[in-house]
Length: 386
Ligand SMILES: Cc1ncc(COP(=O)(O)O)c(C=O)c1O
Image 1 (cartoon, rainbow, N blue to C red):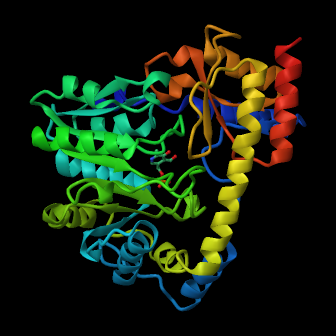
Image 2 (image 1 turned 30 degrees about the vertical axis):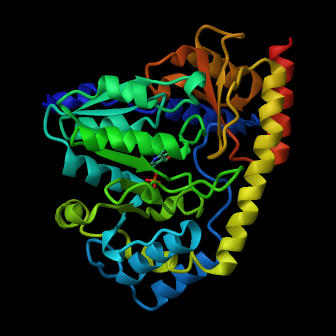
């Protein structure tokens, strides 16, 4: 038998994948399923970016780029921070990556020694703990709930920050809760990390998809925060596999070295296409889509509350609602399976997001049309009120 590494025992698959596979099976057998489990926009990439991708392919843009990305794209990303956030950024600090996923791996590889701990919210994005395992670190979940807006508080972080903590990783807006870290908390968290000689890593992948006042980037707080973003969500480019990392200047040579070795470069075609992503015509399409997500949230949130799901904090961003389903079940995983089989509605059980009360939570993604959301709510109502 093949001997695999010890870390493999810690790395969990997404439970929702089994659910998705079952949903596809049911659909193949003729059942209609409303998908509210999928963590990517239902819209395809806007046409201006697709056209730019086709042009790049026709022009033979099929070779590697520098490991840190096309210089023009790094400059364009830096200019975007000036335009959108009024933050001045040296393009040399922008590293273009194969998705936020690769950016997270680069940061962990650059910061974490074997045995070091990395603090992160629980519930949180499931891959984060696995990126830490990959570099033989120890992920430490910070239990977060409604009282703290599902984001780690400075007090929690201060209490957990011992000598072997290398970094705190937060996401704002968060997956699965859609909640945003207030700027003053970002400042306080950064101050704690700095005082302990560690790093703050802020995943801003859901920036752009926010439905209240504009939110600040962590780069406005300090130049020594690692900021991660991606073309996947707001820009609607999941399958192009493109993201970026803004690193403190002193660490850029290390990140460059790692990127050369781990990935060589992000996909060339995607980088050329992404140059178009910041143009006014494309941004106008993205803003329309953002408004569509907001409309969906504004419909689904009260509808789920009405049905008896508890969603105590109104999420300000992303496209998720993290709901307490304890009124219906003590086992959210079994509940999700039953909803799929008996009501034809697919959602994600809490277990995919961590260990803090997963059995009483499920995540609804509003990455489907208003019509589908209405039908989903009808099915839920019929099933739960039977
Ligand atoms: C919080 C968060 N970070 C990172 C990622 C990875 O995204 P990508 O690699 O497509 O940029 C996701 C994807 O769902 C996410 O939700």
